[in-house]
Length: 313
Length: 313
Image 1: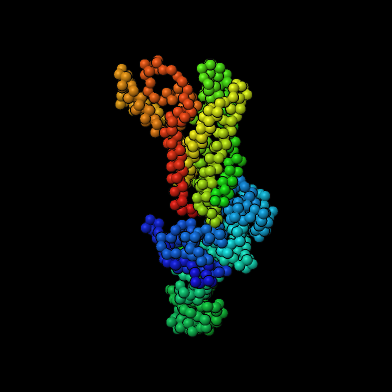
Image 2: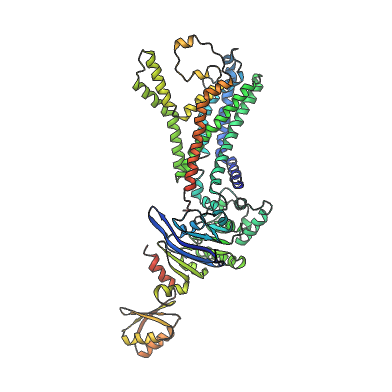
């Protein structure tokens, strides 16, 4: 493709299952070397997009390219440089960790002589060196997920696609996985496409996210800007509960620095702003001689997005 | 091509180290050896000076208590075929291995081809080894070496066995492709086997008797009754297989067992062994149908598998 900076380019991508539109006219570009989060509730079409990117299912219309190769027509070239970790990753239980990785390595045509070295190397990265000769059926879920990462690293991928990397893991293990992703991105310059419905975890590692809802990309960009675009507001939301609300006080709040908008809901005011200005607000209200019964700040624009788009499914 | 070999090698390792292989091998060996023991005890009477084909009696002679080797084979081959095919695809799908393996740079058919070939190889090894063991024991105890014609007949027998096993394996792989649960696929395959092997002959008999009364004194009616019953039971590949191996391994009069014979004809018959060429002409239709069925079953599962969408959940 003409755009050399993008590793994944989807153009007017659609997928229909029995007249049911799962992916609807998706346009998406993912840059080389970035960590991109594809977020959306279950059933939004994230996995379908991923399957189409790998050529495991055909789009109904439109096209998707990975590193310049058409995923539908040249799936082998795409799969050679792309590592994919499915949502429910499985290994051969009766084989050792080493055996499983050796099989993957063989399927990738990695020369037989280099395989042992390669296996040691990737197991070291994910911290499973000690469990090399252990049967996979004795592994915990977190260990299997780490083995999954080792499995995709065997082929030295340019791009790694993770479907729900933190699903079903406890917070500590999930954070370890995410840290490994960050490290790999930095050290090996691997592009990551992470799909997840766990926004709070994803916003830690994904500078840029796309939000998918019912097959449509409803927002794309960095997390902070997303909230602004979707709600016309800033990153912070401060809720105030006042003894009485006057038009005058709303006007004064609006004039404060960094305030984007002020909404009135019953006795409550919601101040949307780009900075934490709680001090300024409380000073202003004390100066006005009004009693403030409660003040509460929400930092997460994503939380709002979540409520708005994810819960309605 | 290399990836087929990789999958093939792995599947073969799996089969050989699996418990089901050991159990089946033990079963077949016990059945084969005990039937050989019985055959050796009875061989003097059966072979009573009239036949050149003493060696083949090893496989076709049974006793009062134990049936002959070919009776066991007719029973066991479908079981081996089903056991090594019923979970080929769906167990990999359920364990989450399939989407991981398919995301490697291999063509999708490598997986199903490699699995089918590995299953057939295992089956061939089981059948060939027991036939050779019986031949060895026979050579040692009866002291009559097989003629080149007998050796050819034994090889054709093994060949038919492998294709017949291939049919059952193809059928059970087909169920493993279309059914999600391994329990469902094995039960369906076994149900079909039981129907074709045990119930179809009964149904054929009932239909024939309903159309033409078996009590009828007319010779033409009796021939019609027999023909109807026989045509219906030939729907079952197990009938075809039985006919094929009996005709091959019983050169003297084997081909007369499956056609209506009148007493007048029998009394004037001089039984002479058929040459191998003539025997092959006799079994040609059965042989072609068995090979065709094996190919058709595998082809259907191949096509369905290639079009299926593999999701990890």
